[in-house]
Amino acid sequence: MLQPKLPLPARTVFEPGMGEAPVERALEIRKGQSLIALLTGAGIHAGDAHGAARELAQVMDLRRLKVGETVTVTLAGGRAPGAAGALSGLRMKKDAHTEVGIGRLLDGSFQSFQRQRRLRHTPVAIRGDIASSLYADGVKHGAPAALMLDVFRLFSYSVDLQRDIQPGDRFELLFDRYNEADGTVADYGEIDYAALRTGGQQLRFYRFETDPGTFEYFDANGEGVRRALLATPVDSARITSSYGRRKHPILGYSRMHRGVDFGAPTGTPIRAAGDGTVVSRGWKGAYGRYIRIRHRGGYQTAYAHLSRYAKSSRQGRRVKQGQIIGYVGSSGLSTGPHLHYEVLINGRQVNPVRLKLPSGKSLKGEALERFRLHREEIDRKLRELAVGQQADAGTSAVN
Ligand SMILES: [Zn+2]
Image 1 (tube, rainbow, N blue to C red):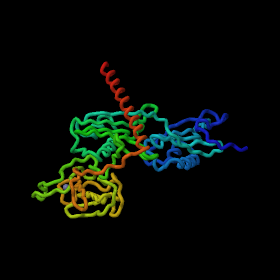
Image 2: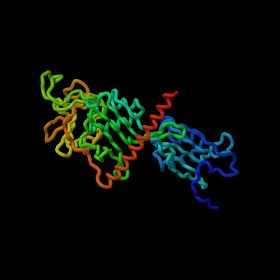
Image 3: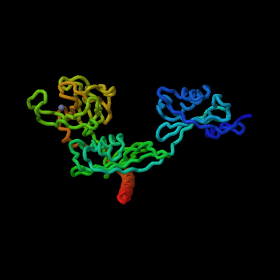
Image 4: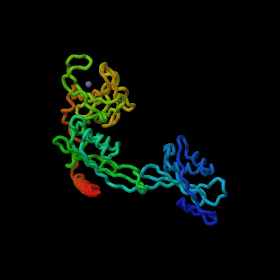
């Protein structure tokens, strides 16, 4: 008799007459352990383990199993004690948002599946004064560190985050938090909104889907945030020496410093300030390890004293804005680890801080209309969350 080939949920695969109900077991992946080793180690038939692994590989890269991750297996019941269990199903987390697994069909073969995990997502607004740095205070107010790096990069198009930020400047962030059913945090979404009030200026950036699957940040007027060149090509660095005449720290006499120095530990990633082509890379006398990139509009940027280069920054290669091209060091004539950064226009160094660069694209027509609606939606969310926070604060004040 032919059995219909239908995928069945693992739990209901057992048939009446097979004996007791199937048993679920949670197995934890140990270091260096393959899925097959994990399954056979739990007493599952080698044949089943191989079949299950082969089928699961359809929906997941099995070389990417994470140590400590749980694999939940379902074993058919009714077997004599000590007999190898027959595997009737298996499921596990592929990433925070996806579950994968296999079920067993009536003909004995395995069938893989992939589904969205049911996570609760909550918008989170974080507001605060900057006491030490945008990054540190963001983390202190509960923003995840990885998101604060994105925020840092986002504002680094417009603000010199070391020079311009003053104590008392304020920031505001909006992002989604994803929770498991038991309440533990599974993941965070992207930054939906980031605002910074510094000096006289108020920066407000909204994440907006320009084309299906493509997101960019725009200010309240729909002007793109991406600039031709980043103001800060190193994460979390401090300007240790500005552009202009100064006494040279090693040579001793006064001379023109034709770049900006960013102090950062050896090995800190250096990012291409803009899209462009690497026109030179190699040792350049006092500059030590040196990279120069040619950008559109007659601009070039140069990076000196590197400890090493990134593979992707070979001469002649195209690089994207923000891509890592090398790492901070102290090669050449240098007193300590830092990036010496130069911007050149038509071959001559200029003061990068004074540059007024064109902004990225601006939204028009239908896209601008859509953006306005999106912006109103975000603003409404922020107001609601602000009210919620005040209510919370009120309750705790009573207690
Ligand atoms: Zn320098």
